[in-house]
Image (cartoon, one colour):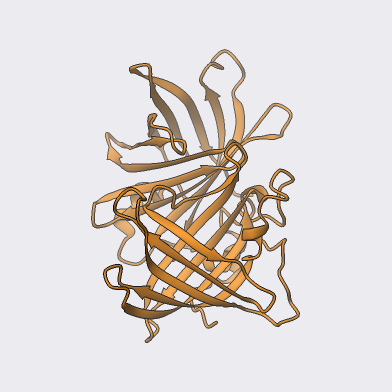
Length: 331
């Protein structure tokens, strides 16, 4: 594996996500439910083979590398998939966050609802594995294979599988926005850094607000922003562990956001755009629900902002939570 996209260790130490996103092992509530995906932990060299969904003929072969590690307090496994042309030019750089949904007794990843169904053969003792994707254009009645990936684990045959492997930060994190996209990425770019927050939720307006921390940082070669929102109860135990990836779609001129809270069992997809000296988002609340939600960043200053989220129930918008954030001063 000859990746040239790794962030230098000195830059990782000061990255806002370095101390909050990776995990050194599985959370207690996940243990026993993630054996299949845990076999993927570590780094892999791949060959990606694209197949025509029309006649099954090959459409191209690309070398790639795939890195898996534990994240979000050990409740999720996040990966980074880097794909190149045979001449070495970069053609793909993406990430997926996979979490166990205790309520539905299944794994949930951030491709849910995208029309792609993964096909995966776990890693074997000889350090080889396969994965792929199938496509459907009729609501899942029929499926066609569009991609097959075959990989070999990086490392010696005696290394085995590291079930404690943390997220491989050098392949995920970036220290600046991607060149040429600075203006478009500025919509959320001002959030990069760490913030202390006070959170009020629906029905708790008369109670003391919960406290927490919100960290934003550049990822995926500076083309996306990933953030971690941790909210704690009065006894200091975590009440929420939100992880979001925000990516600007230059073709549509708007942002799309994939969010998971593995602790609360929540998942949402939304779109965002600048509006009225702030940022507005609209999306679908929770996996499989049809409840719309919307949120906005407003009251934006250099060292503070406000955030508000609402859901549409019983024919009207109801405030779900508000957040007041103060930028954390570096020690």
